[in-house]
Image 1 (cartoon, rainbow, N blue to C red):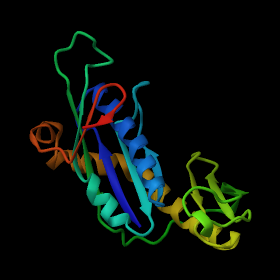
Image 2 (image 1 turned 60 degrees about the horizontal axis):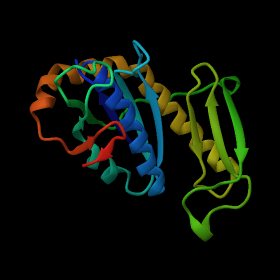
Image 3 (image 1 turned 30 degrees about the vertical axis):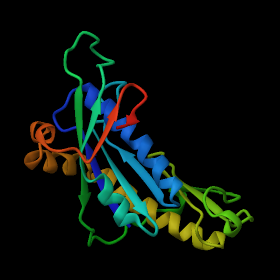
Image 4 (image 1 turned 45 degrees about the vertical axis):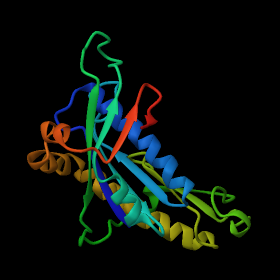
Length: 207
């Protein structure tokens, strides 16, 4: 299990829009290679999106996937917020979080709703055809994870609970994590850095 922090630093609304778009691309890439990816977002001051988010990735190749995103991400586009603004380069930072030594967060059974369904997505002929896949929803927060890799519903429930507990733990710490990273990797430094990924235009096309 690998965790990433995404932050817009001290950037304006355009950087938060970029962060939201990055989460969408990241989720699609993870699904395409069969990785489980769960997201918890920080507070959103307006409709443009949150200033930070944490992502929990699990599966073979999760570490490599995380490294491919770690660094600054550049979005080159005319501002959708301020049409007459001259600036077109918007940055966010992606940081890999250290493995936690904290005990897993224990969730109360009454706080979690399980939904079973037939597994789909990556897997081809090896994909499980029974209703063993599980979606676990944390009722108080609305955070949800899907577990489908195991052959039994029982094992998928256990995996979902473990991932949900980690997601909630990181979600609770997201403000602290973002503030800590901002201290030594603020928006100005991100902008001067060499981006690990670049996207262009309103459609967020990879450059």
